[in-house]
Every structure is written in structure tokens, then in C-alpha cells.
Amino acid sequence: MKEKILEVDHLSFAYDNNHNALKDICLAIYKQEKIAVLGANGAGKTTFFLNLNGVREPSGGEIRYRGETVGRKNINQLRRNVGIVFQDADSQIIASTVKAEVAFGPLNMKLPRTEVEERTLSAIREMKLEDCVMRPPHYLSGGEKKRVSIADILAMNCEVMVFDEPTASLDPVNAEILEEVLDKMEQQGKTVLLSTHDVDFAYRFAQRVLVFCGGELIGDGSVEDIFRNEALLRKANLKKPVLMQLYDLLYAKGKISEVKECPKRISDFASLL
Amino acid sequence: MHRNHEQITTDCYSYLSALGEWNTVYKVVFSVGALVTVIAADSVGISAVTLFFMMFLSVGVGKIPGRDYFRLMKVPAAFILLGGAAIVVQFGSGDGSLFRTGFFWTNLFITESSLSLGLHVTLKAFSAVSALFLMTLSTPMGEIISVFRKIRVPVLILELMHLIYRYIFILSETNQRQKDAAGSRLGYCDLTTSLRTFSGELANLLIMSMKKAETYYDAMEARGYEGNALFWEEKRPLTAKQLLYGGLYLAILAGAFCLVWRRG
Image (cartoon, rainbow over all chains, first blue to last red; front, side, top):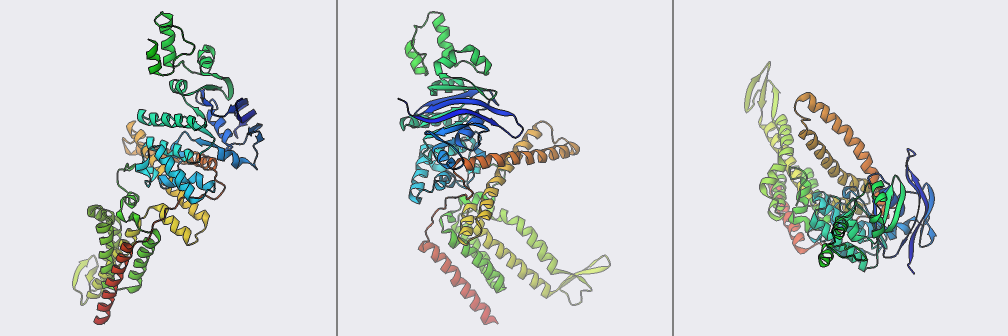
């Protein structure tokens, strides 16, 4: 049986101007799941993530972490276990060097100095930032800043990792480094949630897809189910992944045989031909 | 090192300097000590020795390119030289002066004492600036703040210093982007348009900075910030080599003191 980590129960959230950014969201997140959160701009993805980490307090409903309702008293326990990488790295990076920046989270977790340093350097290595350890963040490129913001969360070693549009503004090499890190996280038993507009990336990465539209959760299912639902894709301003489109096209022309699950990588696809 | 400004900044050198590895507290005490010595000694000899030794440390040992060092010195130099000139040149009848020239209804003149005082003050000011340059060109802001923490400056002020330091670069980067975007759409084609564009940019910058501040706070909270921002401070050991340079400076200072004292 799958281990339930987070439960979102009738979650609603409204900003000051009474605009309902999230409406009655209900779902559960299990250990080691890889979830892609899709939706148009302003659909509520970021607000959902901020609620998951406890940065925003729900206007209605509740979030339970390992069965325990999250409130002001145990909010830090949630933050220790659910790490979030913000969309704009510049809004996340606060310290004056890369090392100090990555160490910020572990220091707040009140870990011993040796462990803070160990975790910090390990996260820096993992994100291939060894050349930038003592550099100030403002002298880094956009891709490097993004990698620093990811290293921030890796150093906290959270159980659930949330990435808000991690591939936005990344060049292919940096995107590849990110995908390697995501694969490693899966091997380490982490639960990963990420929002993206890149349906091909989501298709390759995720086991489960959540679709948001106007603050509502309008789709929650396996990758195949979601991307086969044309009406849902239209409603959420989404498109079918290229590999799926190609598969459908070739299958319709009889050039390819039917498979149980459409291939997710080009190499897998090539083996079908 | 990537730079987000066209000009390489003082801040940038502090990360490039070979003195970056020096013990931070020692470096700050050394620079501030030299500054206090120059002011307290009020001697041309001490000022000259300090100026050359500080330049030697920054350029020779710290490996900051000499040309860049003097380029950075230009701004304080402009103020110091103007100040020095104001002391050297005097108004009045100018009897017994070294040099005198008519200036409207009065005279501009230089006396031996005004020249001596002007040169003395100028040298002292250059020397003090070189001492501070030693600190700023070799110590990143984060490390200077760590020294403040050690001398028990209130945490709130230190946190603000950290955040403001980071924020300056974010805002200047945002402003640069706005400027480029406006410029690309003829936002600076004439004076009136430039003024209008500039005021729009400032208004935008204010709103954006407020929004950014909010996200910034969220990001800190998300990583366990509970009202006391903890920043990593690197431990830099004090080595014999560093002490040797300190000793050398003290020895030269002592020599200069002796010379000054013998001359009366």
C-alpha cells in the first residue's frame, strides 16, 4: 500500500482582493510520486505550492502532513519536509555567496555546523556548482542562479520537493542537469511535484498529472489518462506531447503497432519503428 | 565572473582579491587600525608609509590590477584634490605668498603654510582611503557583516544589511532591464521622452521592489526563517604569513615614528 504523505482536504485560498486563487482542492500525495502540475498562467499552481509548504495559510479546508493537520504550531515541521524551489531564482536567493545561500536552509534547521557544511557542499556538487562556491549570486548567469535555487532545497534534504516551473529560462544543458537531479531524487525515494508549461517534459517526467484551471483542480490522473483527454487539454490551454501526437499519427497510418503505453523518450520510440 | 554591470564594481574585486583568504577579523582590524593610526598620528611620514603599504597589499599581494586600483581611486581622488585645493589656495591681499594672481576684486594666493597644510591633509586623506580600500577590495560584504556580528551589532541591523546588499543588485539589474527595454523602443530619443521614461521606470521599480520583497519573504519563510536569518560564515584561519605582513607594517611604522621624532 502506498504511503500517504500529504493530504489536501477541501483547500481554498483567497488573496486580499478576495480573488479565489484556489477553490476546494482535494487530493492526496504519496511517497515517491512524481507529479506534474499543469495549467495556464494564473491557474493557481504557484498558490497551491505555497499552501503546500505553509507559506500561505489556507482560507478554507486543511492540509495534513503524515496525518497531522498543519497549523501555526507545527508549520516548521512542514517546511522542513516540504521544500519549494521558486519560479524566479532572484526572488529566492538572499545570501551574499553561493555557499551561504545553500547553507541558509540547513542553518535554519539548527543542524550542527559540520552537517550544514557537508549538506551544502554535497548539494553544490550535485548541481555542478563547484566553480561558484564563494561567488556572489549576482555575478551568476540565469541558469546558474536557477541551479543555486535548486541546491538550496537539495541541502535541506526534504521528503517532498516542489519545483515551480523549474525548466523556465533554462538552456538545454541546464535542463539536462535538472532532469538528472530529478532522476536521482526518485532513486532516493523523494516525492517530487513540479509545475511546468512544457508538456513534453511533464510527459517524460511524471507518473501523475494534476491539471489546474481558474483555481480549480480539473484533472488528476495518470499521464496517459490526462493527455488522452482532449476536452480537458482544451479547457486547460494544454497540448498533447509531441511524442504522443507522433505515435497517434503513425499508428493511424498503420506504420506502428499498438502498445500498452505510449513511449516517453525518443529512444523508446525509435525501438518501436 | 559574470558581471551584471558594465563597470566592474568594488564588490567584484573583493571576490577576486588574493587577500580574500585572509582572516576576516584580522583584515578588518588591520585596515581600521591603519586608518586610526593615520588620523591619530597626523604626520606626513606615517601617512606616506601607510599609503604605500596599503597600496602594496591591495595591488602587490592582493593582485588587484594596478590600473583598476587607480581607476577606483579616481572618485575619492576628485573629492580629496578639490578639498586639498580649497586649503592650498586662499583669498585676500596675499602678502608674502609664494604665488599670487588677481581674481576679480581680490587675489588668489598660496602661502608656504597653506601649501604644506594642503599637501599634508591630501596625503592623509589618500592614506585613509587606501586603508579602507584594503578592506573593501579584499573582503566581501557578507564577511564584513560577520565581523559586525562578532562585535555584537544588533541582529536586526545585520539582517537588514544582508538583505539590502542583495537587494541593491536585484534592483539595479531590474532597472537595467527596464532601461534596455525602454531604450529599444525609443524611450530615450529626446529629453522630454527620456524624462517621461525615467519617471515611469522609477514608479515601476518601486512597485516591483514591493512585490519582490513579498516573494523574498515567502522564500525565506519556506526555508524555515523564524525571524532570525542565519547566514553561513566561513572560518578563515590566521596564518603566519598574514601576521608577517602585519608585523612588517608595524616595523615600518615604528621606523617612520622614530624618524619623525628625531626630526622633532
